[in-house]
Amino acid sequence: MTVAGKARGFNSVSPTEKVIRYVLLALVLVITIGPFLWQLSTSLKSVTEDVFTRTPSFVPQDPTLANYAEVTETIPVIGYAANSLFVAVLVVAGNTIGATLAGFALAKLEFRGSKLVLGLLLATLVLPGEVTLISQYVIVRGLGFADSLVGVALPGAIQMLNVLLMRTAFQSIPKEIDSAAIIDGATAWQRLIHIGLPNVRGMLSVIVIFSFIYAWDDFLWPLLVLTDPDKYTLTVGLQYLSGTFSNNPRLIAAGTMLAFLPIVAMFAFFQRFFFRGVEAGAIKG
Image 1 (cartoon, rainbow, N blue to C red):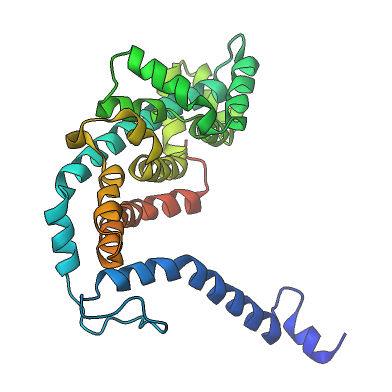
Image 2: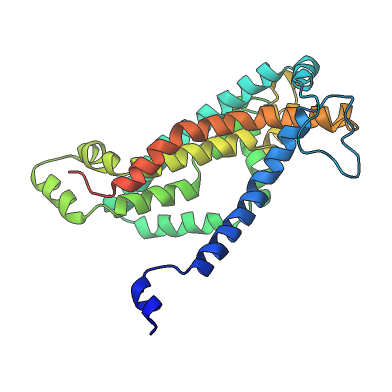
């Protein structure tokens, strides 16, 4: 081993490795953030700027918000956004409550058939969503929720993946803590509230974020269930832009940004709770 190698140590990174890491990081950043920045740039370009030129400009020459104003005049963006928010709230609430209760039961409660239930949950993850689409619609229509926002939110109210995530989070709590609580006379509800929930806040934040994104971005299921234009969610309502303004990508980009900004705000609000829960690490009694 050379003197330089001894000085760096086994855990150190050579300058060449640092350069490679930063190059790969920059490449991933361009791939992930590039399309978003390009859409934002297109949405801010005025009608006098040619977006179909062979060498398009990334920075708008004359930035304007007129495209956003025209989108709001063309479709009822606020109404569609309110519908999407209502569906997202139902989906987030259902997954937060349902996945927590189901995950705690599978992880900490002993009952007959628990392994069978777990196996069935795992089996549902193998099937793609398109396979059960028709059966879901038949069930929702039979319950009387066709052409309603409740019918849009119902199939995603409790997702099996979230149940398994909560089960894994509850299983990470040492059994000794549960045993001590049972000896002290704690009920299952008390163990869930005072022991379980304080230690799975990080996972709950993950479920809230991804449930919101799932409900907000869903397009196929609301398009199938809803027939009244007044009840359209934002993603379904934005299809009017691609049909009416198919030759004007500025308006389509503006509508895309209007649908994307709430997700950014949602993640910006909850990401601190997510990282705080992950970094806490320690088990709280």
